[in-house]
Image 1 (tube, rainbow, N blue to C red):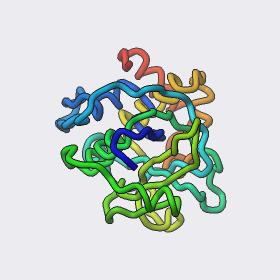
Image 2 (image 1 turned 60 degrees about the horizontal axis):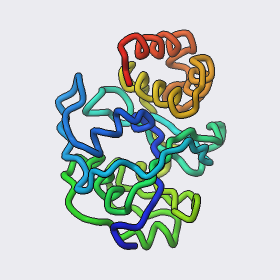
Image 3 (image 1 turned 90 degrees about the horizontal axis):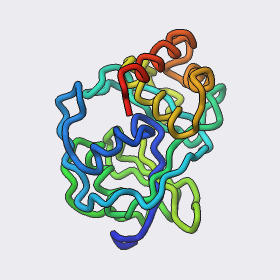
Image 4 (image 1 turned 90 degrees about the vertical axis):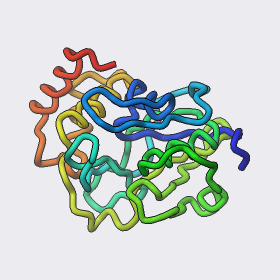
Length: 218
């Protein structure tokens, strides 16, 4: 696939929030962090964005070096007892821009294109052992493949870890802005996710969501 071909990037974590995604696109240091993003080599905005509902589940594990607490990952085949639908925002990017996003997810500067032939053929490709180096193909939309990145391995045996309030608030704001969900619907979705379920309750989540609104998170 040439670097200027179009693909849908399915964002299910903090990149649900477009203002957060722009740091991957344009580069810079998000407020409250020390992480400096290199930006895409081609910083043209996405051709389109749209809400997506994906098969599978979002879950939280590992340790975020940016926000603290668990990180969001995607399981296309959810283990028993997990939710069966994952909310995401689709960004229509070039294949080269998607490659730059994956590089930055792995704390590397944008540097070159990816060979997407295996993920498009097999539905999955583990580029390496890193936490976001596993690519997943989730079908096509308007003639363009839907791709995302996640952790390798079996999600059923991962050690779950709750996300921080700041990270969770960004995801909540992203869900609200992507789907126009009220706080009650956002908290209903999030409290069912592995890593949040049984740790955060709905009242706590709604307080986080309200705090993000009051802080002017865009």
